[in-house]
Amino acid sequence: MQLSEIQSKIYSLTNTDSTSFPNDKMVIDLNIWQNKVVSMILDSQDESDYDDTYGHGDYASGTYPLTINRDYQIAQSEGVINIKSVSISYDGINYYRATPVDIASLDIANAPATATTQQATIDQDFVKTSPQYDYKFNSLFIYPKPSQADVDAGGKIYVEWSRNAKEITLSELSTGTKVPSFDTAFHEMLAYGPAYEYALSKQLPIATFCKQQLVESESRLRRQYGSKVKDRQTFMKPSDDIIHGYK
Image (cartoon, rainbow, N blue to C red):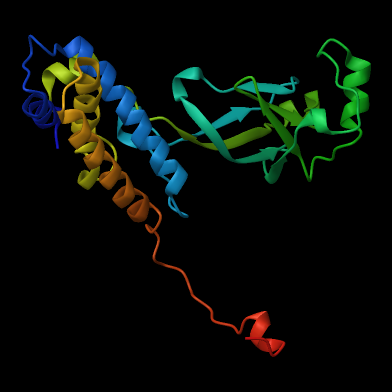
């Protein structure tokens, strides 16, 4: 469905028009419900990975050249929800999968970047063939910290993440040709969601119906996105209870 069709459905449900439910109000509710739908998808998906690739214009990943700093900031415009994987190459050739760590949970003292001696002491607990990272402040802090030699060798960090859909703009709503990035069967949620918000604000009886439709759609969405990848092998084995003679 295009946004123009979704908007028509909202008008129909709420008995409104562009005057009583103007675009600048509707686009807020559209984005609220787009974010809710994406959250449901990310919470339900199997090995598949949802992304609004067309909206963002790229894949949900980034490559960052190493510097002599420990931290690497991901642009806020990416709308990162969670980190999927981090791989680091200190020599520009061989990449090693980095594992997450909360530096505060380790039995070592943290220190500001200016404390170079303490930073070097921290790095002694990590090795480049098995790097780790702490994701905080919308940035990656990698351990061990790269050296100038690593920078000169062309070392890099490759990161994949999950992110929000690209926000619907007022211009896109006015044009009406944009298509939501998730499966067509659930585009209706961008009609029932804003209609529900409007009905609540006006204390309209239609709110109950819209809520029922949203609950039903969410159930179907979770089933569909939880079973995207069918290409897997299923194995059967006896349970421990049967092995041990219990029923």
